[in-house]
Length: 137
Image 1: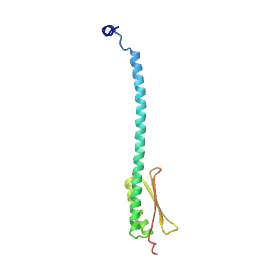
Image 2 (image 1 turned 180 degrees about the vertical axis):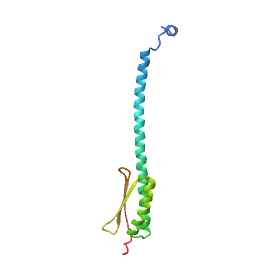
Image 3 (image 1 turned 120 degrees about the vertical axis):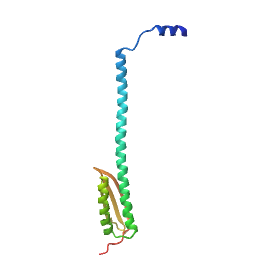
Image 4 (image 1 turned 45 degrees about the horizontal axis):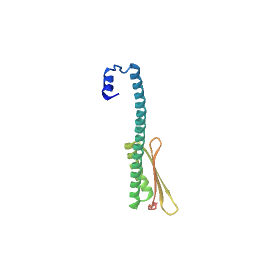
């Protein structure tokens, strides 16, 4: 058959899409769209968790920087802890996270400082070792 014969046949063909074919097409399309929708919902949840973890990490870093400031300015551990309790209470009320910090003396006259930021579960934890002045009694 030549091209003109095929075109003539297509022009005379009056068959259309039946209702069953249309419904089958819509069903297949909705299955594909549902699969993509589930992917986007999971991506949004993962993005939310990542943002929360990043925010908690920044808060822990901020607390460690403040503790490092006290260490560098030759402030003793007890004074540093008292100052940190005040600033952490302020930070907790503004962020909604629970912030825990601990000082423990190591064998080489450094203090191990651990900062944990919780928001329902542990979100971030940072640790460092810093020199502090001995507490004056």
